[in-house]
Length: 423
Image (cartoon, rainbow, N blue to C red; front, side, top):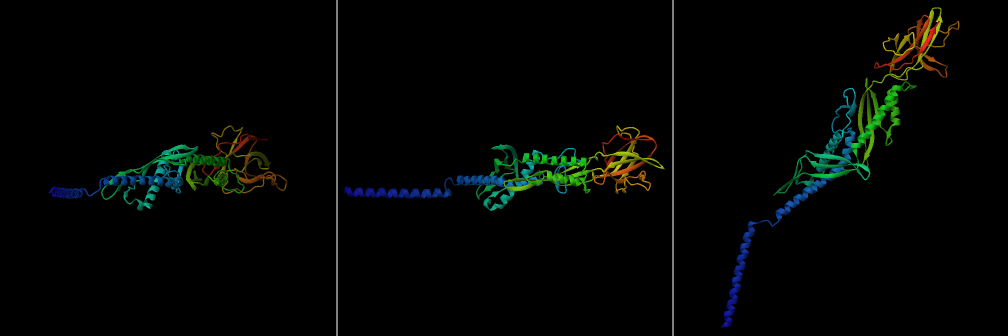
């Protein structure tokens, strides 16, 4: 009897347990239906978005590093500016000097260079993100570009710059259920090219070339083939000033009362060669050089006494005439004096043989009051010269000559004490 009661009790206990577990399972299933997502799923998705944002920021940093290879040459090719120089441009070249119109130079400042570099590198980043758009389909990036700070520093003894950048507007990464806004940025990206100081080197090279050419123009080239002084002096500068075995100056041009110089300086970065292009326009206020080898002597014939004034051709190719001055004593200054003659050498004057004689073996008198070309000296040492004859009376006479160029500028120096006593 006891065994039967024990068996019945055990069976009842198992049945109750079964009913309880079944009920608990049903309750759990009903609760689960109210929370369809696993616990922590949203947090995990947010972490994935954050990781995607960091991945994109890292991509932007690498794009900036690679983009510098294009941005640095583009900046140099446009003369250190993103757009037009404040001094304007000439024939598509940004000007660093434009003396006729601007009192100060327009050499690109650190701010100009940083701004130009930022614009160029922003464009490069946008190009790279466009190329790899399929890898970042879940990111909406505005096309407003980036702001940068550029700081020079020494990287293991070599000039370099540190670049930090951040997007002007925020980007957004999202999935169907949530989104995350962020600003792609990077700090202290090292570019082993100090373009801020490079432009000072470009300017020094250009200034040295301009000084060389203007000094040459002041002296005159005295080219035997009558080639224009500017062409000769520029050719000498092309041979003399080189960087990386290439000329600093590409060409020059006479604009009337101004001179244009076009510079093309070779440089390189990250294995890529490029050229810095920029130009100068300077005032051409260079006066003709001193007129050399002034000689005076006298001749006489049955018609009277004459002074023959001779002087060497000016070495400056742009000289178009001369002024002749006369005084009773040595010249100290030409101020307030009027020339006795202003003669033009365009077209070239007629030639007169300074040593020609008449049938009676007397030296000939050249036409009075007319400039003539002549060769003074022996045939092996003949000096191209000009000749002018003046009819005079007796007494002491002094003469000097100054040159006039095609822009109307006159020699500021003159040879004094070219005097003679006519008895």
